[in-house]
Image (cartoon, rainbow, N blue to C red; front, side, top):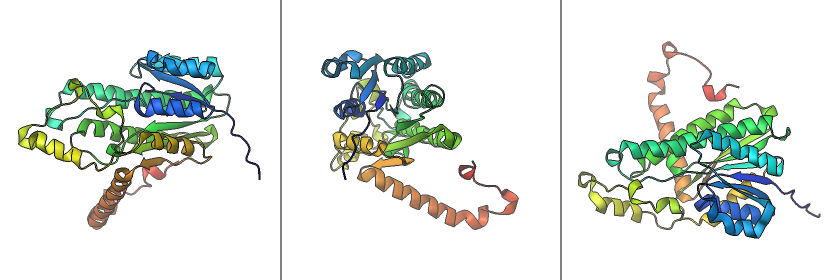
Length: 292
């Protein structure tokens, strides 16, 4: 049986400057698709513009500015007519014990990793529903294994990713089936991307009371072999070609281990407290995640 060629798609990617975003941009274009690549420094993608010409729309985008997010979608529509898939990927890293990270640095992280991500998700849903010619669309949201289970030295990063998990799973339950909008949260483990090569203003020393830099070094040494981001991106791309998307895509050993560990933990909590805490006087209702 002859397999028909896939119809080229239009992707919109945030955080295309480096890491997963840059790799996905390259992969999408190599597959014959078109791409709206957005980043804080479009000049870094000029090589791809030269190679792919009009198939790549290279835009400046600061995801913390809602007007720029909206403008990116409008530019995508003007250039390509529609968008099939949004890769909501832009983010920054932050390393340090919770107690040692200044509040200003933590708030900046949330501005990008939570509020920026949420703004892109919100505008993706609106665009897919109202401006995409009735075709709906697919949304791939970058989370992390740290959004499944908290990671030492990455408390605020973990907290932001937990918030992304919470808001995205809520959106999944709010959207209507007839809109034909499909969303996947991707939760990578440890991968060799620039997000872990942090500048001094986003990397804070471990206080001696917590074990100092020796403890931090031991934590990093526990990563036996970081994953290959190129292979992870190829998997993400392949999954997004499926008609039915998974709600979650944990990639890598640490991500799968985290899912299993959290599942066991909550099962144990439910079993331990069900008899004492699940009495009628404490209320009876259909769980909110089953409503709708």
